[in-house]
Amino acid sequence: HVDTNKKRGVLIVIEGLDRSGKSTQAGALAARLAQSNVPAKLIKFPDRTTPIGKMIDAYLRSQSDLDDRAIHLLFSANRWELATSIERTLSEGTTIICDRYAFSGVVYSVSKGLPFSWCKSPDIGLPAPDLALFLDVSPEKARERGGYGEERYEKEEMQKRVRELFRKFVVREEDAEQRGDASKDDVTWVQIDAGRSLEDVKESIWREVQRVLEDAPRRPLRRLWV
Ligand code: 2DT
Ligand code: MG
Image (tube, rainbow, N blue to C red; front, top):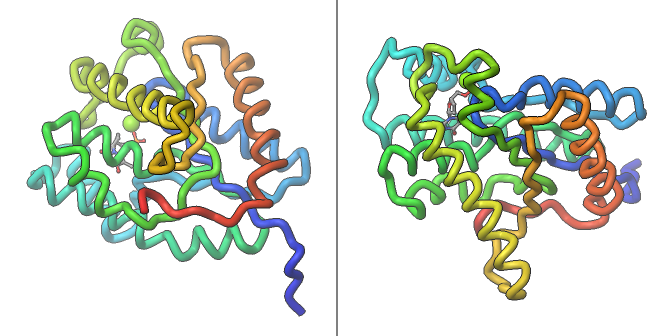
């Protein structure tokens, strides 16, 4: 017996810079959903545990060198290898919190000089998030929090470029919404000031999540950039 009235899960993506508190907030959100009896699962990209993920991990730790396009496609393939499982989980009624997704894929590669539309294309057709949260933090705040680590990309110059590009995603979507532009991505972006206290950020995120849990299950799951 298939319960066709069963509500689907909601796909929530958390994006942001290193040191923005993404992983902490993703964990806190998972706990809050559990307390509220909302079935939820936490995933993260890159998923460094798969064979592709291990290649990505070696690259990020500078143990291997790869062409910019080759590593871009590996990041995308790392999402595609989990896409079916993401869809199944959502259709079974479990909400997914995803720590980084295709937007990280685009902005980090564009920061290195690759063209925007080329960067988007391998991720076309992935399950689209019902809500994308951009945790914004200034370079000064990141420095206060102990600065960056040792991995590739964890440099202030790169972080600044990435920040501007994330903001462009948010702004482009807001503009398209206002113009009533039908070609807009259909991703609901919310920018969160992640320079505030952990508690304040948690509350802002929870407000947005409650709203999407109400609305999103009534709509079919969308696909990215089709
Ligand atoms: P973490 O520190 O969150 O493990 O990320 N990245 C991530 C990309 O360049 N492309 C992608 O598609 C994804 C998901 C962002 C490790 C680094 O990998 C970058 C930081
Ligand atoms: Mg990192």
